[in-house]
Length: 353
Image 1: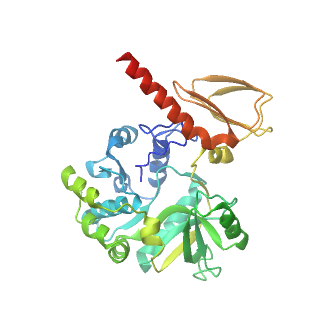
Image 2: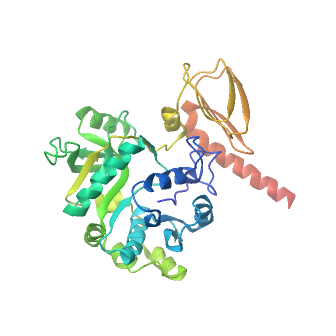
Image 3: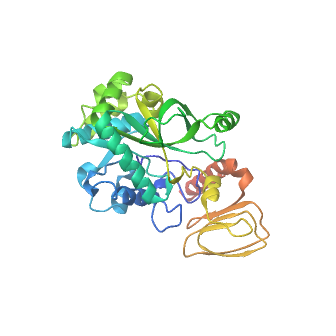
């Protein structure tokens, strides 16, 4: 799933180039490229399908060259994740009615890819043979209110799989205090947003819990015209897989992840996953000269040099034409900063006209 347009990483991310197309982690590849390469270890390249908004099709094909036409499905409008997954499932069903399907965001960070591949392969074996739904759960470390939480049965679901548990409930983005209580019980995982199920199980869940989505989207296919796709999307409800399916489905299991994971949903979460020096400063990309700098995150273009002195607890981020220097504790104001800059640029363009 690569259609999001989040702008929390302004200024390096914009609506025209959101997080999945940016080298957020400083490893020389975009989040999309990193995710694609990870799943090439799980299945053949030609089995990977990317669903994105139509405005991003060119960027997808530039970043992942030589994809077949069916491998990039373009949404004409955003209707959350349930329609997106149903559209992809319809196309997959044309190619292989017995398919096993992994649904994954394109913009999450995985640490320990060997373990990730091993966990996914274990989940695929379960869904291929038992008709269940498996999700990957991550042991929480902080009461993050931006994540979903999965309550699980403490007893392992199988004597042969101590990392597999029955799911009791899903809770999407609880308040911080509730998240803190969840963690204290020891009965909750973070929801990684990765779902594994057979095509038959997926279709059955949609037909039972989201029948209107199933009826319209399962009629689509790789040969559907843009007009046909547009019509289906225009009439579809906007709902997530979590709310529409997972909170109601039965026979759902969570496999405890043996890898590290982060949604990387904000500058603060990137700071939390970055390698930091003895003074708590992390330079993700760029060349930085630091003097009396503490607890700060630096993310500037690889070919740029930045000299910083006397900062404590800041975000320093830049793209080719904009520099942000903001207190980490004031990150919530970044959306306002971005809006002000955009408005000023529009006024400047109007004056030129």
